[in-house]
Image 1 (tube, one colour):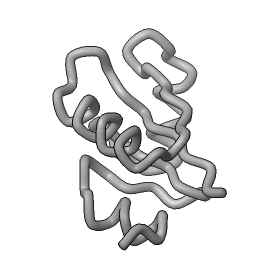
Image 2 (cartoon, rainbow, N blue to C red; image 1 turned 180 degrees about the vertical axis):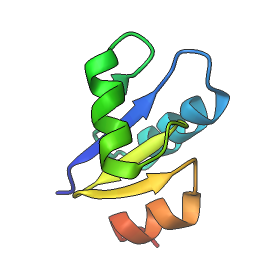
Image 3 (tube, rainbow, N blue to C red; image 1 turned 30 degrees about the vertical axis):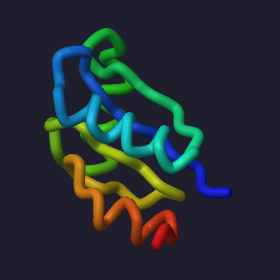
Image 4 (cartoon, rainbow, N blue to C red; image 1 turned 90 degrees about the vertical axis):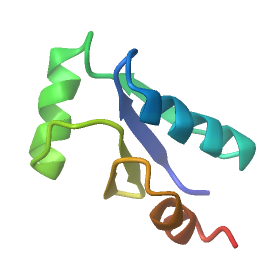
Length: 78
């Protein structure tokens, strides 16, 4: 099974869309709120070089934004 983390903020509509998509696909994920966790925010920036959310990490690969096709490809969903 894939290890999935999603870096989010509470006011991000694309974060909600990404989480809803993962739930619809029955994919378990760890949500990390970078608005309230500065250490996690810095970790996210160090990994990707970007500050925007959502950032979805699947098995160590970072997907910037809610890119449904990239998510499906990485999770091997048809």
